[in-house]
Length: 179
Image (tube, rainbow, N blue to C red; front, side, top):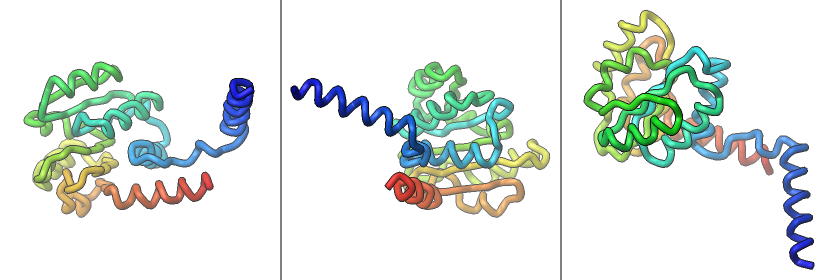
């Protein structure tokens, strides 16, 4: 009897998820970051994402971007082997953090989540990238604590920098929507 009860329960749960919008609101940091970027660009197929880090959160971000057909995906990490492993899962390209400056001007979407105690990306590096980009906007999300991206980057024109605090608001809204 329990077997039938569980099968029926799972069937009802699937129907609720399919027939309602209960899963439409973001409740993870990774999904919230990608969802916000999607609203910013309204489609990813012609855009390039640069992900800094290779941990669980960045892996989820890469998965969501891949599902939304990101044009190009770069993964930068201190450990190149980890970056290569992650990038390979999502048809992306890997690079060491030391080569970040060369790829940065190509990034329309920049999402960072590392365990670094110091900022990974400085204001000077971003200024150089912006000059090369010639007024094309950059959507950046710093998920790390402490911050990976120098907060002063937000003062630059054509940079739209969000932090984990901004995403927490999106997640709380998503949780309330689901309730």
